[in-house]
Image (tube, rainbow, N blue to C red; front, top):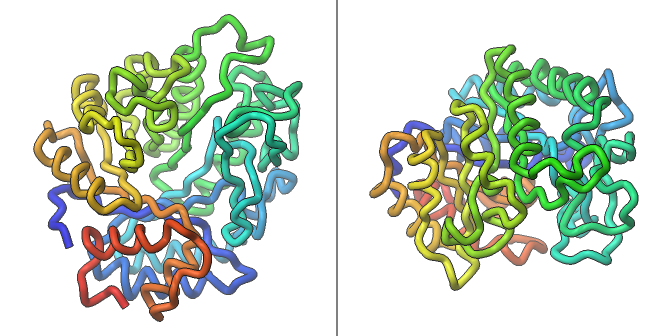
Amino acid sequence: MYKLPWKTKGIVLTSPQPYNNEIPLLAEFIERVLAPSGVNLIVLQMRYRYQFKKHPECQGFDPLSYEDVKFLLNVCRRNGIRLVPKMNLIGHQSGLHNKPQDGILHGHPTEGIPDFPDGLLRAYPFLDETPEKETVLYARSLCPTHPLLPSILFDLIDEMMDVFEADGMHIGCDETMMLGECPRCRGIEPHILFANYINMIHDHLAERGAETMIWSDRLLHHIDSGYNHAYEASANGTDKAIDLIAKDIMCCDWHYGRYPDYKGYKSVDIFADHGLRMMVCPWKNLDDTKDFIEYAMEHDRGHIEGYLQTTWCSSGELARHFLYGDPPKWMPNMPLLLETMKDVFLPSRLQG
């Protein structure tokens, strides 16, 4: 296991599935594996999977109840772990049912594939940035300038923050491809739309004394950053928002090392140059995870606050493997993820 030098050691987990009895399973995973390994932050990917009282029409697949959240919150508090809810609040508003086991809609790399709206867009399709399009690139987005969006959005944010008693929220913002296309947004530069929208949510959370966390790929230019593709960095003009967003936003810098034309991890330097804090967020490729960590350690100017392990799989399946040695059932990326977690994240005595 790596000795990481930063104060935060976190992991992103999908919301457990009540119908699979995964809530006590996740609690056991937290107490027996994550807490003893030094994890002090869990970002729980909720999306819309909560039994909202104000807007039940927005709730997602197999939602957690109030009691479910309180149970997990108490487990985390008992183990000194900060629990932060995550919602996708601009992009990733639709996708494919290609992973029914985790109840999450996933994006697609080409247009021409019918997708399914999630949460807000399922309930309020007029909030779509591209309502006239039958298909879109990757996933649909909320219209950042729709006058009816803030009141509904803030209701959902406040209810989620209240039940989690949270001091922060991860608001997603990654891979936002559809922007500046509706009549209201057309003609406004993408970085202005993006920054204004993020700052609006940031200011709302700041009024509660809460931190805003984002995936920071849209703040990086796809060529200048050296990542050279449109997912881990932006090719649609949002990158200039890096100088417009609030400086206390936590940038979760995710890079997965899948592409042969990487040119280092210059995003580490870019965020330092622009006065922004960040966390190192790898995924499943062990060599690339080590490269990312080592580059970040060498180039840390005091702006790196932690390590956040992404997982992108069923948290129940992950827990069953580490607790009981169950083999991965279906996800092709799981063996690579397990190798990475065992090498850099978990002590050997806790690996099942």
